[in-house]
Amino acid sequence: MSAAVKKNRQTQLIHAPRKAPQSIHTVQPAVYRASTIIFNNTDALFNRHWSDDYDYSYGTHGTPTTFNLADQIARLEGGEYCLLAPSGLSVINLVNSCFLSHGDEVWVADNIYGPNMEHLRNLQTRYGICVKVYNPLDVHSFQPSEKAKLLWLEAAGSVTLEFPDLVALVKKAQAQNILTALDNTWGAGLAFNAFDFSDAHLSVDLTVHALTKYPSGGGDILMGSVVTRDKALHHQLFRMHALQGISVSGDDVAQVQRSLASMQLRYEAQSHSALKLLDWLKQQAKFSQVLHPADPDNISHPYWQAVCQEQHSAGLVSVIFDAKYSLQDIREFCDALQLFKLGFSWGGPLSLVMLYELQHMRSLEHTHLQSGILVRFCIGLEDSQDLIQDIQQALSVLD
Picture 1 (spheres, rainbow, N blue to C red):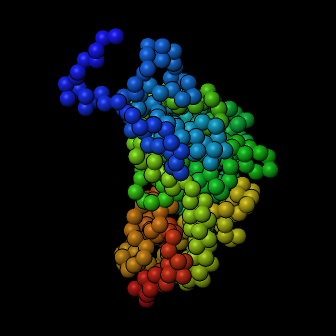
Picture 2 (cartoon, rainbow, N blue to C red; picture 1 turned 45 degrees about the horizontal axis):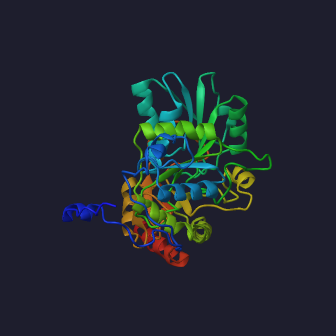
Picture 3 (cartoon, rainbow, N blue to C red; picture 1 turned 180 degrees about the vertical axis):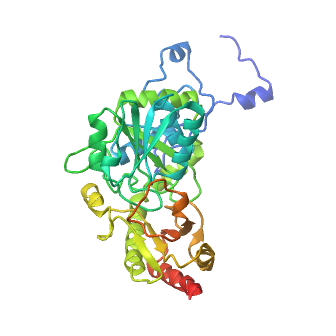
């Protein structure tokens, strides 16, 4: 046996053996940070395929850290396969890029997440897809042609929080072989199972989820996911995911993974607080309308009941101020809030508020909505009575 060749100190620093055992059992899984992944030999390099369930070939494709979280998100939402992306809008982009081509028709709810609509309008201008808008409360407004490829759903909808007629819309899309994609950020896999909902046991084809919200829970991580039960759809998405170079940070993934254990507890706490605020808000004369799908007076309440059969709902509630109040009045109200902070997103520990002018956000007429400035309250983990007192003192600036 030849004597070991002594290596330069610099080489030793790079190739130092890992003497400590590299596998232990801990509460949280190990965090793998990798761009390059080392193959043991050429057999490992050549006897693999990108479509393998756990193909370790390069960091963008996946590591144990990213695959672990993806598996958990798939289970949470009732699916089988999941891909991660750097934000909720990133997975929306992934879905639109994967399934839409020149001349294709895509149908979008009028209350869809605004950046999704903006992205589709951009694709329409640049690449010639056809964007059609429907009323999520009226299945008859969804009139697809033979060119229709994709139906976007959101439950509940953005800002005005209408719960769509999900049963009728999905049935109609399936009858015409149109792919159904649900933005599941509000339900978060907890309010209902998007892959087995209603007495008819219906399923959407795929869900997107801004993990930035409830799964992260801290208001400090950006991430998104897309989940499906269909392996062929998953492979289409996975291929586009690779072509677009989509990847997520292992450290960010570990933070979301760590938060999942408390996600349902946080969701339920914020939902409970929102319902307490709902009862109080409905008694305030300065609001012409209070919007929440769990409210029996809400126009979309029957659709929520049909799908969210365990009566779960997210921690958001919106109000429309009496039309006599100007935008400047509502700005002063928002500025007077002390616990609620101005900011986008939800699902974190801190309660947030945002104001909207609906006439600039909707393209269809919605007679169920009052005129006036809308304010959305995103409930955090503060005591609900403290939040009510905060709104009450801020309303006094309008007296």
